[in-house]
Image (tube, rainbow, N blue to C red; front, side, top):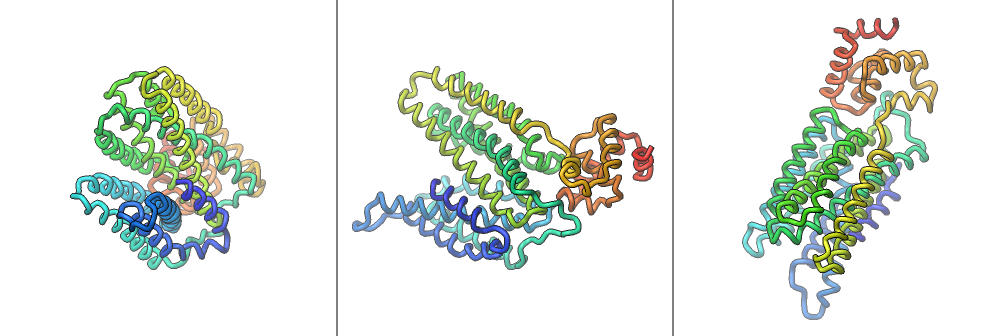
Length: 419
């Protein structure tokens, strides 16, 4: 995993701007690294090669190859239409889940063959996707949002990385602590939890939660807290529930992180791989920290003193809640913020009138964004591109605005704004 993190950091630093078009040339090396890494990991080595060295090289190949392939898939999703990516990401999770369930059920030897076929299949699909869309995504300058300044990008990544890191520390901690109670039945909660996580991700997609990371973490925080609280009961039942909840959180946060990054790529594609690489590296670091923490505590305690587990779980509860409430905070209107940074983005009178209506009628931050663009005379297709939302989501927001403002047409809404 360390090799994967280093690879993510290097790729994020190197493949930016004009160099991003060269990134797809790493497809063939990533496939080879995955296959060689798997062969060194699962096949017996010759007598002249130390087993430890073969295992180390195999882990290195898998870490580097899989990290590059993750980023290549992110580049594919960045080039898709929003509607297509929203369907493809949850479906890809279902495919991975089916693979994870089927592999252990195969006779001895066949699981290794399946593991070798996986990178070839993934690489073939990547090749076809690149061939179908040979050019990388190019944003529409007329509808793209202003590019983030370096300070704004750094602030954005910090605000997301801290809670994301703590979330993966929590997931890994719960996974290791609860696993010893399950006596080999870990696959059951993994399957149930992963399926539930896919359904949760689909719910985010089709019910307009979208890429609002603040809303996502406010929704997931209570679920993570419940999983940590269950560590106060040392039983197999609580461990089953913890593993199920952890699988829900894992699959949901993974899908929504990708969705968040692909939407951001619409306004700043040049740093799209850097953003994905940074968030994936943070996730891996959190997983490593959680595993090391749990393994160290449980090894030193010998699975006896459960009070230490409870204390650490309580500390994690406080950390996750504090990060969610204090760092992620309340979602704000993107366009209203842009107006403060760029006076030409939104006329002040339009912004102030829309804000007044929003406060009076109880509009959400995203509905305020849509209202401002409607007030500026923008069409729904333009709003879709500018806010990187799907058509159905924009239509839903417009319907909510009409309902809350008690109007039935755009003209009535404009009359209400201009009163």
